[in-house]
Image 1 (cartoon, rainbow over the protein chains, first blue to last red):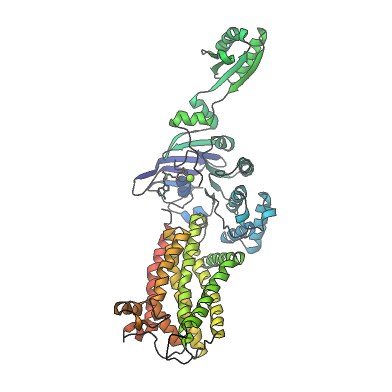
Image 2 (image 1 turned 120 degrees about the horizontal axis):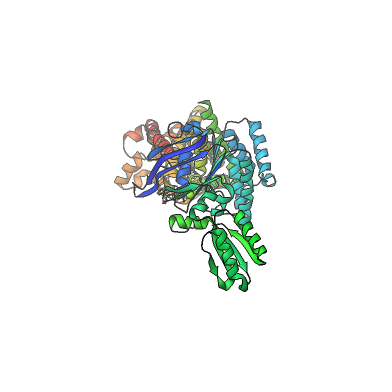
Length: 318
Length: 264
Ligand SMILES: Nc1ncnc2c1ncn2[C@@H]1O[C@H](COP(=O)(O)OP(=O)(O)O)[C@@H](O)[C@H]1O
Ligand SMILES: [Mg+2]
């Protein structure tokens, strides 16, 4: 079952001069996490806003939880939660006030809204600051409150647009923890990010987008192997380099790269840990002591570079 | 429908809570008109002859009431622009609530704020000699009329806020329009002193017709500032009602459309 389906979405701004989405298609299976990964201006926010009924595409169609986004936006709004790129809560009000208000707007009763607000504040470690105006919150607290507001009624599908952009490393780790908890609870999540490690950490599947198009998709592992699989790297004493190179090449089946300066031998392997074990055993039998061994997996940075020919840019500070 | 009303009221409540959290806003929005009452009463009051029993203050109060109500549209506009910028509008638009709730709720909140400000100003007026001579019903009608005017105007504020999207800019723009409008009128001085061309503008200015209508309802006899036997000076109530309807007919649909498309 697909919880989110987007087909051939296009959207242009400024009378067609800016092509924000250019025939973008993606889907998210129920209960899984898709990360839409792309640099600033790739079209992430535009995609989320279309799926969350805030924006109409120029063409193409989309369904969320089986409901057509364009034909029945009101019904879609009942089953989604959205946390936009910038925390969208009322700064002058307290965290508690905000959540109770949003509860009321979801048509929960007064007492029910209060209970839900307390519950969510507790869950996101905001109980202590519940009675303070949001103005006084840190960036991370704001984002958590914003996320809480999108969870007032258990949404079937949750959209998070760059949930950690602008947070310091600690805020980011906290947010990841919160999101991982949510995912365990079984929500279907579409999350956008510019951070490669974030997609790697949180997502079941990644759709890499650039200039309004999906340019690659798959699991983090699949994307990495698309760029080239793992490499075995091994460091030995200088007098063992030749023998080690032979062993590595035999097991890898490819020619090895030797960096004599740092006495490191590396070669692509397709069997991962198994190859690593084989090499270690062979070295042991030959009486060679390895100083350092490891499997190096390509980072998502490498993936992005290989796919787009440019690195993912950082968002300028707003 | 019931939900749409409830949703609007929740938004109104939000605005009242904001006022409670930031009382400065409330204090300044009442101090300013009270200050105007006192300044005009004591600085100009002595030098403007009115031929009116009770003196200048009788003519001044309706003028300041209208001006104050007109000025609140700047707050409407900047409040909404702020919500837009903060992305709050996106959140509201992603909720399963009536699309009109956010804007309708805010116009209601503005009306409540206007009630409060008018009460404080009336008290200040009474303290410095304002004495409406008409029946209590007429006096209430005048205030109702002022609230209706404020309500109609807050729709222009809504539209401006959605269109401009920057709180400070839209606030300045609003004042650039409302300030000359309230002074190019009969609110503070007779229009007869103005150049002929401006007199016509002033006469047809909705602020003038509102002021004239209120003066009538408060029991004043002469239409201070009416220069000719023009239609608006003869029929200020009817003209004002026409203006209010005109404003609503234009700005309600415009605002609602702007809100719906606020990001397309
Ligand atoms: N309201 C708008 N008006 C004009 N151009 C826009 C608007 N919103 C987005 N864009 C443009 O569309 C492209 C995609 O934007 P966006 O979806 O916000 O990207 P991302 O969220 O990935 O940074 C960018 O080139 C951006 O400048
Ligand atoms: Mg974005």
